[in-house]
Image 1 (cartoon, rainbow, N blue to C red):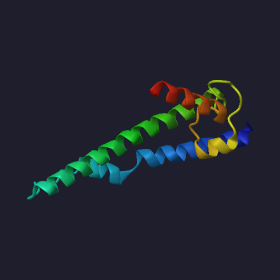
Image 2: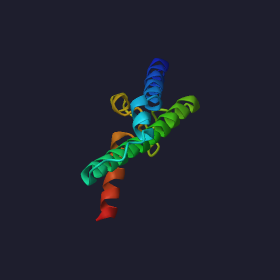
Image 3: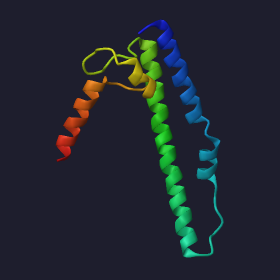
Image 4: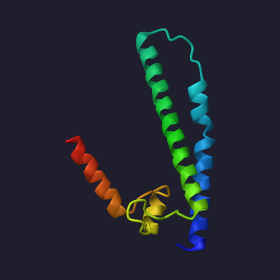
Length: 119
């Protein structure tokens, strides 16, 4: 991977990291303390909405962790190298998933093995 490509992916990852950390709507919804609803269905609706936002927050934390790890791989000089076969990960794959750890072939093999274990 060229230095220019690495710089491009680094800026992409940093931008995504900032977006995930600075989501004010998500933070406000989770911290918001709703008034006591008058009806049972209103309470259920509020509880569902709160659980949905908590799930989104958890996913956001996971995403931030992935992005930070990708930045660490850039700094270590291992970004874009498959963790399984140690070949280069295709740039097109990194464009779609800049935090990818595996090339397409190794990712598919891992998913097939996981499906077999579930059966």
